[in-house]
Image (tube, rainbow, N blue to C red):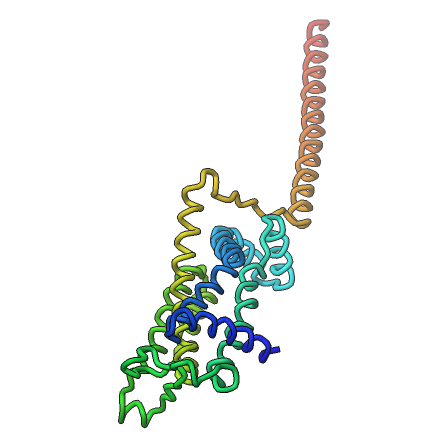
Length: 286
């Protein structure tokens, strides 16, 4: 499977390289082609993330309401998202699609001799100066970092920085997302020190184009009239209905009791009035 993906992208890169004889440029053009193919999926991810941010206040209310009952909390949140036509997996789909592509390109550049004709392809970003080998791996270590600062180290740092910028744009502001906002860039930076520089450049350009697409989609959404989604409040659960019914019953019972008490007091008043009248009549006869 991975060999097939790597073989496919080797054909793509070889074709682009024949037109533009620079491996770095070929990787960037390939990144653009991948972004164009996944453009609709990325749009759905961006819109899903935006809508999810709008639902956050209502979801927090539900989480606070059922904080002592996790099962009921999950059920209430799930029903609320269903009511607002939100799929929590919509934001993950583009990542699932791009992951095999990323692994395939990693395999391609890690084992370039197996998939590319290296007798024809120059592996340097600047071929004439033979500067920055795109198939090289920074291989950072504590000893290496102190003894020699390599120009290759800059690419993992840029990869981490662009990942942070894109994550900040696309993630919501709750506590779990905040942790991922910092963890993801750190992980990408660390891993990038063991990846070929060409793959890191692919990741950097992917982030740059994703940031541009994110801004474009949000601007188009902002320009549209009525683009704002209406958040439907969570449906009232059975307990709330039962409480309301109990309150209604209590009100009815209290009104019946009040009516009975009113009739009693009225009867007592009438009885006392009749007794007074009889007493008056008795006095008149005397």
